[in-house]
Length: 218
Length: 222
Image 1 (spheres, rainbow over the protein chains, first blue to last red):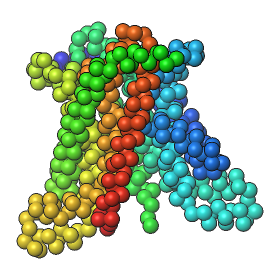
Image 2: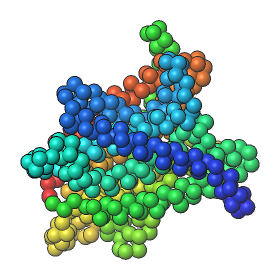
Image 3: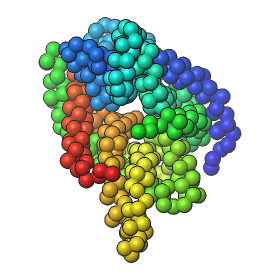
Image 4: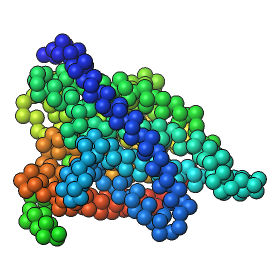
């Protein structure tokens, strides 16, 4: 019933899709980190109106389904604004907005958890505000937010599968396409699930290790 | 511009029906996830070393596969494996969401149970309770309150993930929106309405769950 040759043959066919999935993850994550830091700083240190806007922005991306966000960008943005981006760029943009919103919450909490005395000490030593933030506060905050950031990376790696619904030829897309070609549904989809498993499992274990290593001891 | 939204207005009965499916899908899958998660969490903490490692592996496997992939596998693959015909999409959606969220909830339950001091269990056993009684009456009620914040996050996540059931043709809200978009080619009013709806619904639910937690938080203090 389970036709093993079809199962093994599926992997080479999925490879180009895997490349797109990895590309998307590697491209989105650094952009999201930068945007997230900017959002967290805006919410912590910017004047009230700007901080409010940043909060609203983050809340919006956190409180709506990612698939809907991607569809909105993909279908509504071109028809209403005339901006026509390639599919890959559209979903990458959507993923950056979504992931950075979640990351910024984490950054905000991490930066907020470093006692204000640390910043004062930096300033007392003659550092500027920027120096005190990047040399004193941020390095300490980073070790607190790192495990959560690493799990967000794994989360993003899995979430990229949603782009398959918008004709971006990622791992999931290739599998669904192959399924309609050879009708070996069970074998192809099992190969798909196994591909994600083999790639994400070690990453998830690495995250667990980071959590143990960087546990905050009060 | 507002004329565009008459499409939504005219199709309210369809959307209402779809909303009902979304609610049913979420209630059923969250109930399944809580059941599975509680059983697996208890199994990990009290089931001995082998059960702990076995369940731990299953949880890690489920958590490593995207929910979309689990969903299409359950809907298209599982019936072939079991030789079932006419597998209902709704059931597949409930199973996929329930198992996926259940794996995350199991870890929350495990953390919650582990956070209750061992003395509580000892005291219950010393009073003559059986282990199941001690878990059910003494340890779990204390753990539940501490589990609430991450559980609430997970419930909200389940609601957001439930739109993925549209990909296996469960006739929920997002499926209905895609249907309307296909018929009218007017994405703006349809997807914008849905976006606003989800935003309001999810923020409301998240706030309500938070408030519930604040109300009972003091009882779970360590």
